[in-house]
Length: 202
Picture 1 (tube, rainbow, N blue to C red):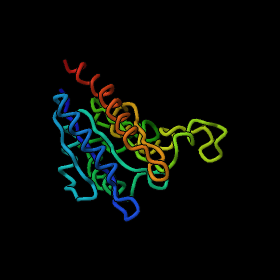
Picture 2 (spheres, rainbow, N blue to C red):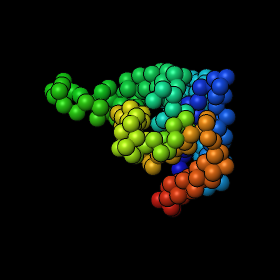
Picture 3 (spheres, helix red, strand yellow):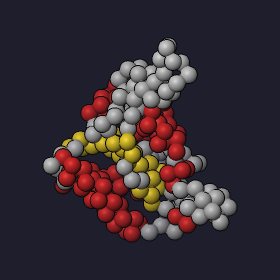
Picture 4 (cartoon, rainbow, N blue to C red):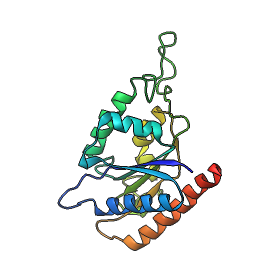
């Protein structure tokens, strides 16, 4: 079985209190436990201890990044978490600096990560509809995928050597929410993605 660390990166606002992200995080925890995985959960906006979070990253086989997309990225409190935890981690625990050496100072930037056996999955909630993505005719994203939009999050994970699992997106959650459909899709996504991890461990 795998060790899974869930990061709930929602930042509560009056117009968006973060209930869907909390529900998804709790649902993931219940699914993982039912599959026999060991689970730890950090709710970022509730506070955290930096060294404990570095150790959670070292402990985990898989990290689930659960967050709402705010202004084309992660919420400010989740960005602060990354600033706090990853800055400490790049001092030698999660990576050897930025991967470069004195012998070759221009090569291998971002390739010093130590979490090479760790996988991660992004689960994001968005106001944008699914139809806004993967369609060159749509004027805003112009054919970009959700993973294209979240490229900085993927690069943060790559910096520490982690490998991606398939991304999940819950779209149009403010203007045209389909919560029950999203939850059913999320359940199926978890069973498919993490069921494979269970089989790998067996």
